Image (tube, rainbow, N blue to C red; front, top):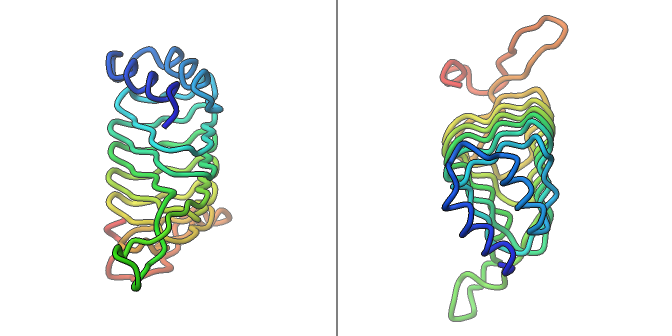
Length: 183
């Protein structure tokens, strides 16, 4: 973590949780991130690592969100909503069955969250994932692979359960019909 980011995390912990959004955006830009002026980021969001971060306009990032990763890019589009305790974790490790530690060499992969995405409470999004425009991720999901635009995903690992039919203006069940109503 850079000194500037450490200073931001320290200052943000002293600021009101859901106030002073423009000030937080300025401080994050001074920390080296590309944050839109209209982004609303709660003070308890924590950033760990050496990643590049961009957050689009009119995006809300809720309480206790964790954004972590190494040398990669984490991109959050315009008009996104990240509920409390969402984890964006771009880093992982190679499995090493010969060394002393099973968690071998570390690596990070990009995370892309396109415009209008809604991510529910307690969801984890792992590196190497793209979540398409206007997708909805149910609370508690673990996103390990790409989610297409205009879809609703849930579960561990997250799977597409419904797809939005723009012509008919309704959801089409594409996943397990037994669980479709819970999404």
